[in-house]
Image 1 (cartoon, one colour):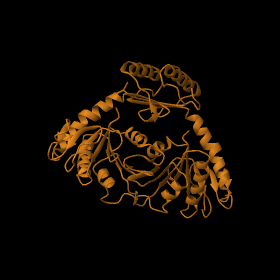
Image 2: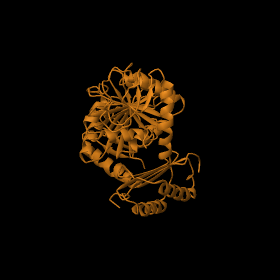
Image 3: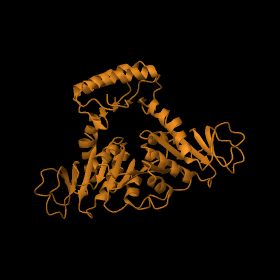
Image 4: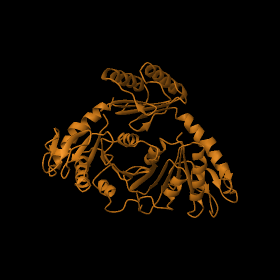
Length: 214
Length: 214
């Protein structure tokens, strides 16, 4: 399971403020949290004629700028499915919170006030002053932010960490593994690398490029 | 070898324009090229009060925004060594061109006009109207951009691809492997995954999180 949750609802429902507070709580607990906001309006960050804009227009896959505090990366989203963008971002995080992309198949928290019907797919919780009659899922009043954070930790972050103990990707696609096969792969690699100098650690990553299909 | 090259020199030496043209040539050849510009001035892209700025200040490891064309990621650079930032960026690229970070130990192309002395470390080529007397390295006039691109392809991109056929990282640090051990790891994993459904492909990535030191 990828640790991804999408916050959806009316545009003035207070999503941004609640996400901000959840990020603060979970970051202080030591989790690496990321946020992705999807917008239909054009992004204004990469202004015309800046160097990053020029490199990007020349075809750079990634055009970035850093100072001593911040790294800003501009990447092409065109031609990539939202699922691909989201999964690449989530890879290095304990939790990725998405605002938007409501048509995509991510688990969702719905801000239910001022909504006539609860119609999005994949809703696993609602936030609102009043619990919607129709939804048979977890419900939180908007004031109970620490409850939402605790629930995300228990139901998304911790199971996500567990399921990512062994991840095998073939040409960018995750290979389904049952616990038994995962355990064999883990123990085989632990044994093989354990004999090499510097081969012991908490996290191991192995990349192989065969150049052609094996 | 990581496929990284740093362009250094006087601030009006024409570096940006030449990088832009090199990106165009190499991207058209199908390579995934990235650029990182390091600046000492503050970056203006993430303006105060924007949602990405709020999420970042709340502690988000990655704060990002996307529309249908572009993905913009804001990440903390503070507390990370330039080497770490650069290597993380280069990982998914065929070539990363850096503008700046001249004090870091990356292979460098020096724009030598108007420089009194060629004093940076790690210079592997110079660009300028006149070949500097002191440097015993590859030299290109600024008009010969396709020559620079061809040289980067031959001396950086292609050897870089070869050396990344097998990469093992332990806790984010690359394990030195000789060809023999690399070949054993490659063939063992090829054999093991080949028996699983969907286990054959061009690129394999395995991540293992032991949770504690093995």
